[in-house]
Image (tube, rainbow, N blue to C red; front, side, top):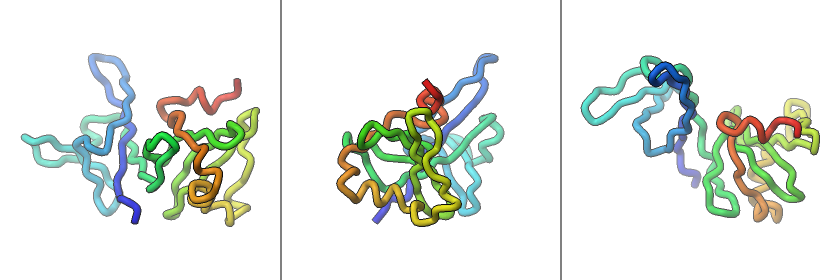
Amino acid sequence: MKENKFRVYCEFEFEGELKKCMESPASWFLLSQTGKLWTYDPVEIPHPIEKEYKVAIPLFYSGFKDINKVEIYEADIIQGFQDRKGLIEFSDGIFRVIFFDKEMKALADFEKVPHIQTALGTLMNGMQGKYVRVIGNKYMNKKILEKS
């Protein structure tokens, strides 16, 4: 059974400078049933996250780990068989992979090819899953997804 957890991509201002970070699942965040993020610490009651962060995006755990036992989350960039890169997306309760060619063009339009929506599960449970490794995420490592 998949463990329900998430991490949070955050942008906030500190001493006049924009900071970006990926908060681990152990950080001080709550996710309501409506999908709203709240933050707290031991001396405060939970409050809406908008007070402290310019951007805060929850990214859900897929239930899979890569070859190095790194958890795979939504928005992660993976590298797999034949060094092909892919972006993990989560929508409608389904994790899927958008693979890219050498020029970083998406190889599949998932709206037109519904059977590929289970690609992450198919990939990880198949022979190719043993080659998958996380190489970054689209928020902190945008250059990976850009053309070389």
